[in-house]
Amino acid sequence: MSNLVTQAVELIYKMSNDELNQVAEAIKLKRQFIVKQNVRSFTVGDLVQFTGRNGLVTGKIKKIAIKNIVVDCGVRGTWRVPASMLTLAETA
Image (tube, rainbow, N blue to C red; front, side, top):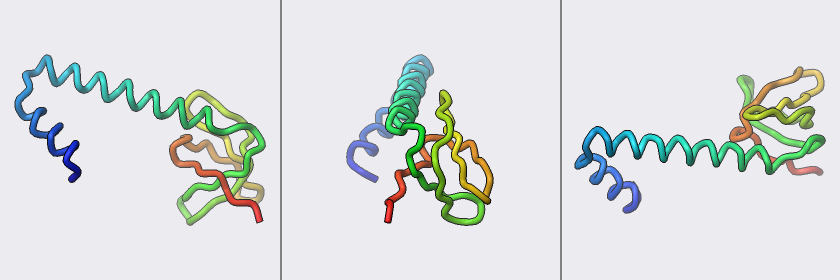
């Protein structure tokens, strides 16, 4: 574990219930920020890839929703994928 994580864990063990609730809320807000940041990094028409049930899947972004992105993968169908699972595909 990194030094920062070790320090955070040590501090968590010393916290009261109210302090733990404040930390949980801060974590929730940070995760929401990261999700929105990921969604904003893509545009309709981008070629993206993600790991699906049967391996690596590549497709074009068809629609961007609040948390999920709809990816058209051709013969493999259309998938609703969380933005955090997507990466831009390298074009050959």
